[in-house]
Amino acid sequence: MPRHSLEVRIRSSEGAILLARYDQAYELPDVAAFIWRRVNGTDRVESIARAVAENYGIDGDTAFTDTAEMLEWLLEDGLIRLGD
Image (tube, rainbow, N blue to C red):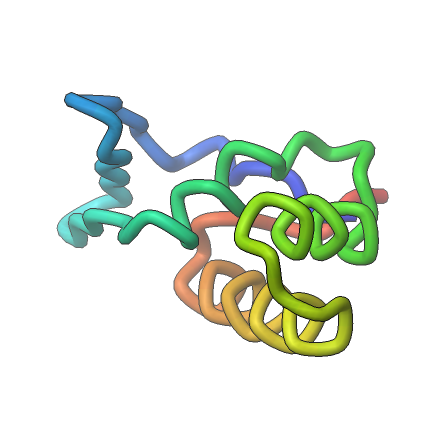
């Protein structure tokens, strides 16, 4: 279960999400911001992917693949971590 990393500073401005970690800054596009908002340390990847599928009207397999790829990128860049 993914959760936000404690080192990340978060700003929300006009619907956009801006993340900062050390000397790196990120502006999340719409779908990535949607996924970020659902990272809470209790929801599994499957649950987040279902929400993506419902919100964007795409099939479950595509939503799962896209969500997993986004979460993998967030994890690799240290913006999220996996729950205990």
